[in-house]
Length: 224
Image (cartoon, rainbow, N blue to C red; front, side, top):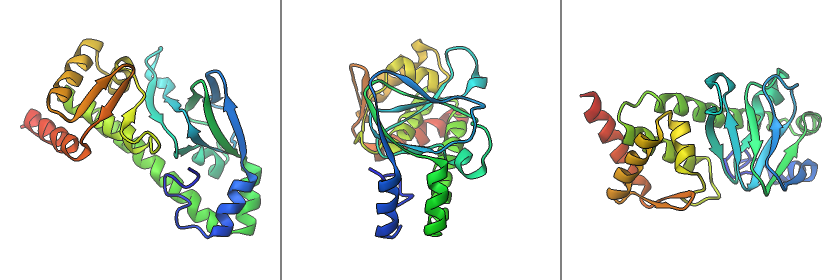
């Protein structure tokens, strides 16, 4: 899981070993905050099992959930690199197993392995891509297209889920910024297309390629 999102995939074996040796393993028995907005800069966190919920506080109220990260994904890179305060709020759901690499340990690894800098940049690029996709998806006018794009984004950052996304329809609606009624109608339309299957507190992607094609086609027709 350590290099699931690719930031360590091309690193030397000694660097991978050093990262694993310096990480702390933590099990969250109950839902807990990893960090909040304006917290001091800290280290990076990776999901081994379970999920992280990413909140954008400026969205307001309880509907601040913007994205969900699954096994194999890491977060916290920006503050770890720049030393600036946290910009997001991140929660670990109950029974989540995570690893933490402190900022001090990151510095020690970088001193020993300069290649670590490139790895951190790769992590930041992956998270920046997710952020851009999150904003871009909200610009899609067709509800089914927007919901489908949200599911594809969740699947990309939930490497250990293998297409079975442990999110509720309500959570999908919050992330897609749609009403519950509109979200349910969009999900039912996607299920009717054969690209997804709705389960209890879970959505399974049956055909990623067909879902992506459908999302692009629906959005194109809505804009045309």
